[in-house]
Image (tube, rainbow over all chains, first blue to last red; front, side, top):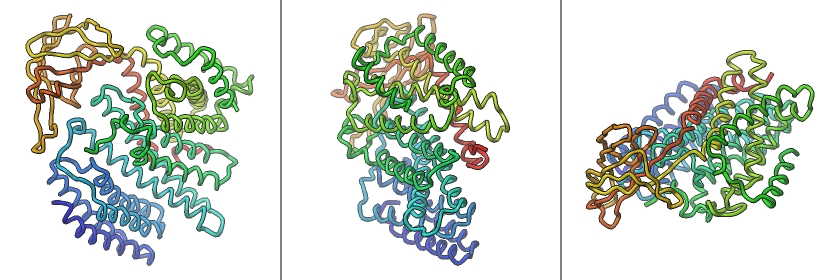
Length: 261
Length: 284
């Protein structure tokens, strides 16, 4: 399996997800579940076959992490849909997944078979996969914040805020697990669990930023819009942690997290 | 406001006594500091009914601005180049305002933990709270204070020659309680020549008389009598023919405490995911 065949799997998966999203609008719940689930299975089978043909988990390059991100967005979407029956969530997750798929189609990055010894660890897959899932869910919470801040005309309901909060709780839980898995791995690979490497520094920033949101939401008196802005800023900081530091002068040459060969 | 005051105080400390010297915290100093710190937190809690400021420290109104300060200072750290011999913003870990804000955060954590422990209501509400907060408190304080006791040394082993001396990070030579002899250096490469695996077959002799033959791989350190031995480097000029292997020896006596904190936070995160917001975190 190579990236040549990616487009076929991607088209089938996106079509199935689109049918699922349409069904959600029409309240055809069963169709929404089945179609999205089959789409996920198709997409995941591509990831699995990549994994087998590369003889390593496809998690090293940015293109490969985008692959997982495109997979986790509809997955997070269907979980949110099953819990809170939000009609628009599947449309949103499909569109976002499509964006990442298109990036991979038009700007593929080198996908060689090699995996340097530092990355050959049982921690590698869980560390990155858990993080990608966290990013997907926190992405959904950021879209929720955008919608509530700029598109919704009427007042924000408690229910809508509850959904946003729950997305943040789930996202932050996964982010915490990803970060701590990283710490446990770092001890095995580099001899120390936390070295304030630029990636780690930005991971701490992102983590604290979401903690601000969670603690602010516990206040008895609060400004809802301010809380939502905190959420958006947190998501911007998350981008910095994910890929922004690759362009940051202060991180150049000093991060052990850059694995582009 | 307290955060702002701490930053000012930190700046004055930075000007008057210079950067924080973490090396001064080696055992037993860090043990004494930790005991004193815990005593301080307990004393503040006992007096919280009498002193308004101590009551305030355990509130959301104290926690949120402190988190904002911590984020702001850490962003500065993320935007500037950090070096161990840098000054001020270029060595954030030794920059007083940064250190004081994180210490204050630990004090807040301590206060809210004590407050919660003395007012338990239901495990669904309190267990995730305590795992998250106590875990972070434990990991933060013991990692910071224990850092001065961590030893990281490099040992250059040569085929057929037992070595017991190692280089400290400052470049000094130290005699180790164990000797290592390199039996064979192993290097495998991919078809394109990039490294696939490098490892060292070694024999370890300890002062207590243990004789161990083992292999150290990248990502697979070996632990012997409190020392973790890592594959660090080799003679890159010689590649697979290298006759030497550089090993890193790490000892961190505080690690079990830090790991306890990390595992508590992991359990707390799982609770957070399973229980969600309404059951898990919400104040009444």
